[in-house]
Image (cartoon, rainbow, N blue to C red; front, side, top):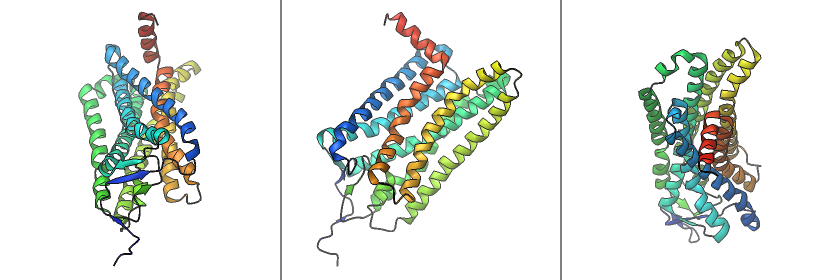
Length: 315
């Protein structure tokens, strides 16, 4: 018979999100940079989508993939920030069980899609630099559509077991999640059942998504760098490297915090909880803010179209 002080939350009606435990007094101050990052992410990514849609000259594979990345960024950041800000500003910590599972699914699903988009963008740069004369014949619109569909379906199918497994777990003693959003591993730690299947599956997904994607990206850029260094002049090398430098920076800014968050969940037992949650929050908030800023500043075509639109409107 179970202990009288223990309540089994087989399907709790709500979860309680604590925000950033240990830093509750600073929640309002922490919310200021987080809110600013969210506003920049929303405005920047919508601007990217608007410019690419308005300019026929940008209807090319690289910009199609960039639009997919912008859409993914908007979904991820919007899945998290409104609830996070309500915790920081209004101490509104309750979240319905089904809403928590939905948030968890969208975060991980679109994160997996983003990783696939990076592979597609790296492949586009490889073809553009290593086989420039064949770029338009290799990356035709039907091929780009098939790549995009594959990226989306992979994210949907790989992450689909997460909420189904989480719904089946019994939750013992507490429904309190010491986190600022419904992260998968944070929920796993609340279950009082054998979660080895879920843990092994999440490790497999991490290997498939992060491991294989990083491998393919690395292979693409190794070929790109070899092609760049074989160019005859320094100016040609710098100009060509500039076309893929922003992609490399975006990839590093996305994967490094994600890898750190993943490793600290499993091996960083001595890492302070509040530090881990700050990194986990940055992992889903900083890249959506950086992507449009980097591409807007470093991509001449987007920068020129934006300046043209602003000057045309007299801003």
